[in-house]
Length: 355
Ligand code: KG4
Ligand code: ZN
Image (tube, rainbow, N blue to C red; front, side):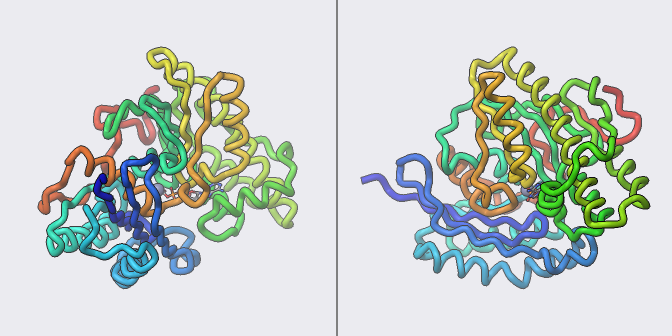
């Protein structure tokens, strides 16, 4: 009988302290035995964004307790864990250091391999608990810190074909919510307000809509919304603005995804489009992408809703894939606040970017 593999995943790159234990016994896909996520929403909501020092302190306070909870839930003994995987970047350095140092000490004490995981690769592989996905595939990664189109050729093999040149999509949702006086994180709140609003009331800009291939820009939207602030007095005004914002986002995503699919199809026969990251929980965005994929003969695949936002099961699945290939990390491995999936992609951010 094949030996069971148990992988622990640890995630502390931003404002979620999360520990997961997954099991692989040769059959596909691996099973999530425990996936504990402790959100710091309450700590940061009065600041309208994540405060790194407070986030790191909270990770420190909770990491041991969350690990014990995950072990109890999974009914796996610490000594039976095959490897410890943890997010080593990208993210807030003080936060990454808490989880990754904890993983190092567990690995040292248990004499089990340490596996450094790229948080973005975690998002990229998050739908693999439910779907048998083969490489290559097209990935749209939409989170609070990143917005990119990537061609995924294999584990650790990414080619970026499009990126935001300023704000990430989740950031645009969060900033818009903040202007509307809605608490952090804003994405789900904007989605709900938009349900009762008029999407045609406000005309918002769509920067680089007709240029820059499948690169995107969202910063102009935030500025336009800031200027409209004085017109927003009633709850209905907020709903209308949320609906208009979301309509604009949908138009941008539809247009840019069409370009990305065309680019992907030039060299690839596969028809899988994976959409992952916190914003992929958005129902309207899911619906738009599903419709577009139907037209383009592509198959849209999303993670389960609870695996869209940050969690440790997605870190553990990358850990598992790396474990099988013996891609272990040394104890001297340092966290990387910046860790692009495609290290060869051109830096395309800020004013003066030429597309
Ligand atoms: O992937 P994630 O949990 O963290 C990062 O790695 O950044 O993504 C968090 C982002 C936040 O900006 C949040 O507002 C957004 O995902 N988000 C949503 C929704 N749920 C979360 N945005 C739009 N609609 C949602 N339903
Ligand atoms: Zn994330």
